[in-house]
Image (cartoon, rainbow, N blue to C red; front, side):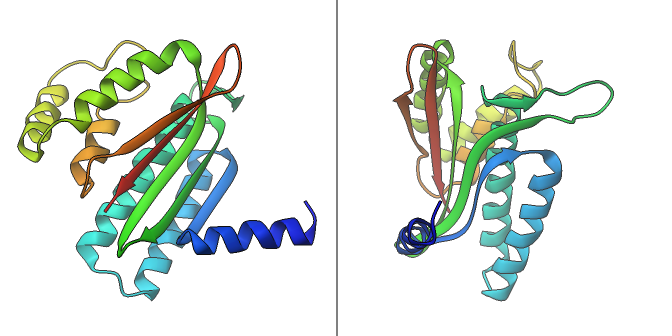
Length: 184
């Protein structure tokens, strides 16, 4: 990337309201460091504590989804520790007076229908319905293939101030780019 390309990228990010962005190989250690930067940035801008907490929570959930579920894995987790490294992107910014957190990562094409169905279901629920589904999920074992408690997307939707937005872009025969955006 040349300086002019980087400048264009930086200016486009600023125009889009991005205050923090990361793209590349993501791990729990990098997530921790980015989280510290986000906290400092929000403290510096004197963000309301309740809003900052929701932004941070959604940021962590989305980054963990990239780390756990990206089809572009650099290093799979090996016992005994969670040394998983996966490629993806995450950004935090402001748009029309509210914060957003957006992430993107590659997923297997076969995962798209199930993920789309789950997101459609979650997006259509009211706040009370989300609470109910969340409580029910906590009492159940994780979904098959889940690397967490199967509540991450529900948690993101619960903490969002509007229905989550998502999209898939075809990347060829085996993969799609999955993008998820939440507003706070």
